[in-house]
Structures are given as structure tokens and as C-alpha cells.
Image (cartoon, rainbow, N blue to C red; front, side):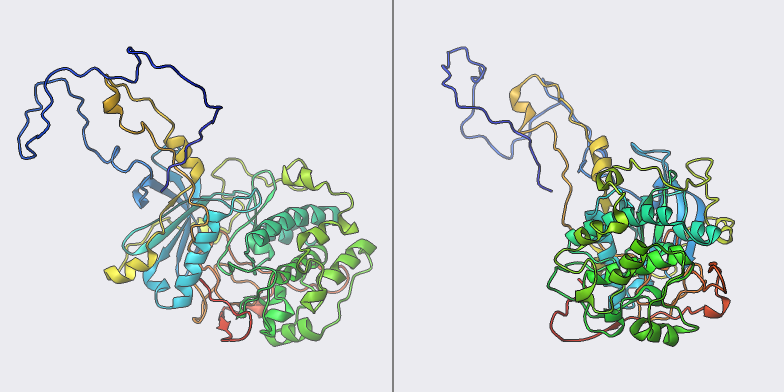
Length: 503
């Protein structure tokens, strides 16, 4: 890792050097100009500095993590690829802090190249993205058989849970959540990342009630305004028509999902929702958008514009992206600077009693005994090399660990070139992605009603629930028992203009 120095440059000054200048070093004794390299020198009796070689002072620029550095407290989720735990850090500068630890089994991931690619992509995205409305990655490390992602713990639970309890949100409440989500998506798009799985289950709340996007298992890197990707993936009810038709999709697909989310929050169900997957797809492609009478004119207008079936006609289509959405009259009362700086009070504050409160998560998991099960299979060295470079420590943690220190020494010669190194953030380092991919049938952590297609993180910290269709009158959200669909798949359309590789 390159060392970064902050050097202040001044105008060049002429300096007169005297004979007693500090730049001169007085040398005592005889200097052998032809020393014997094989000569044994006794260092036990003399004026020497001694340093004991330990793990603490060898390669000190990285904090080496292992499962032993964390105490497992609760289970937050479980799936085919691993588990998500609430844990407490035992060591280091942040000892005692609560985190969410996502644990994945390598043997399950390496069975499919897509799974490996998605795992790396999620890890890469989490490292490169630093934003107030996106979950933060603090550590990533691995053992012989498992991968570990240590994320910030958000005790407010999922927006889905809050939405389930309320049934529907009022317009001002929906506007607040939508504004924070737009800023998160805008940041991702500026980095060439499309999210592709926006839904209430993937939006977490912190203890104050602000949102955080999580679960980047379906996200895609290297997408610019003029590029498209052809992978068929996502959650059907929130999936844009161009993804379903495999016509190639880009950033505009996220804005369709935003419109579907807004409709869901204010009516109790996604805009196009049939009795099964085929019926839902048919409605998305050919169905007519309808609105309840209580919707305002501005809300109806932004929904019509976000849910345009042709991506080039959609509000937020490149090159304007989020700028066009932020200017819509629906957000006329929003100060975007206040939103970014969290100066707007959230409409709902989660009822949590402490930092480690798990009351907002499914008791089906939190009641289980938190055990990181042993690995029952061993991978070859060549297979393990696939995950080379997975280890990561957040820059903010490194800054606390390696504050500049002054070394006392009796001679300038013993100081060497520098007394300390300032660790730098490896920005742009490709981060792996987490979770299973597609091609295999998988089950969501919480199976309710949505139809998930494509790679989905089976060990997401707080994962998949689903909204249900409403009955007559004012639609009320409720689980759809008849909609259970654990089937997941990913279809990559080969060839074609604009096709991109996953990594």
C-alpha cells in the first residue's frame, strides 16, 4: 500500500550553512572502507537499540481479524450459504462495539462461477461506497472454509417491518424515505453501480429512523450512461420491464423500482401484482397503472413518470439521472442539503432500548443459539486463491489504530527514512459480493410473498420478507401465503451490444 504524505510547500529560501550546522554528523573512531560481510559482531555490550520482533510490530498497517475477535450474540438470519449474526468485537480500538457479521461458506459459493463473481462484486461495492444512507463495511476476512463480512449493526430493523405494522404510509412519510433513498441511489449511479434490488426488505433503519440500503448481492458495477447489462435478476414485483424482456438495462431500472416502492408504501402493494409470477410479469409489461382516489396530483404524476415502460422515457433516465427526480414538484418541500445532513427528523423512530436490541428482527432467528458451525469440507489452495484480496479493514478504524507516533532516538541515523506510515484507503479496489447467486434453487431467509429471481444473498443481515396484496377499500399490506416462491434463478443473455461481464 502506497504511503501518503501531506507536505506543505513553501517558497525556496537561500540558507547559509555554517560549520556547526545540524546537517553535519560528527563521526568518532575508525571507519573500515572494506568491511568483512561474514564477520560476527557481538551486540550484547554496546550502545544499541533493541526491538523485540512480535506480531504487533511486523506489518502493522493492517489489523488482522479472525472469528476469535468476535463474540456471537444473536442469530439475525440464516440461509443456504451461511448465517448472519449479531456480534460484539472483543479486541482492538473498537472493542465492545456491536456489529452484524455475515458468514458464507466458500464450498457453497465456488460451485458456481456466478456466485463467486457476485460475492466479489458485493464486497467491492461495500468497500468503495461511503455514504450516510448505505450500510458500512467495517471488516472483511476469511478462514480456510468461510468468508466473513462485518457490517455496522442497525437495530431499527427493516423498513418492511415498519410498513407491515402501519399498512400504508402517509404522503409526507413516504416523501422522507424516498428522498434519502434517492440520494443513496444517486451516489451509487455516480460510481457506475446499479442496485437492481430496491424493495422494503433491503432498506434498514438506524436507531434514529434514517434509512440504509443493504444487500448488494444483485448490484452491478461498471455501468455508465451508455452501457447496459443483460442479466435477468431481481425481485419480480419491483423489476423493470426491460429486465424482464432481456433488452438490456442500465441505471433507469433503479428508478422504475423506486416508483414501485413509492406505490407500495402508499397503497399497501406493488403497482403490478398478480396471483403468480406469470400474471405479475404480464401486468408489468402490459398492465395499466391505476391510482386510489386519495393520492395527490403530484404523487400520481411522479408515479406515472417513474413507471414509464420505456426506459428512455422514464423520469431519471440518463443523462439527468437523480437530478430530474429531485426537481419534480413531489419534492417541492424538500431541502436536499438538509436530507443529506440528516437534519430532517424521521417520521418514525424505532422502539429500541439499547445498542444491541434485536426486538425489530424476526424471533424465529433471534431465539436460536448463535453458533458458527465448523466447516465440514476443505478447499484446495488453488480454490482458496479465488478469494485472494478479500481481507479489508475500514479506513476509519485504521486511522484510530495507527496514530502518528514519535520514536525517541539518540542518532538521526537510527530514525531511518520515516517514523510512521499513514495507511491509505485502497479506493477502487474491487470488492467481492456476498451471497449466493442464481442458477440454483434457493430459499429466502424470510419467505413471505415476493418472487425473487437471480442471485440473492441468502445470509443477508436482515433479509427477505414480502408485501401482500390488499383487499377491497383501502389496501392493507398482509403476507401472501399463496405466493411462497423459493425458486430463484439467473439468466445471462449472451452476446449482444452493451453486454457486460459480471466482474
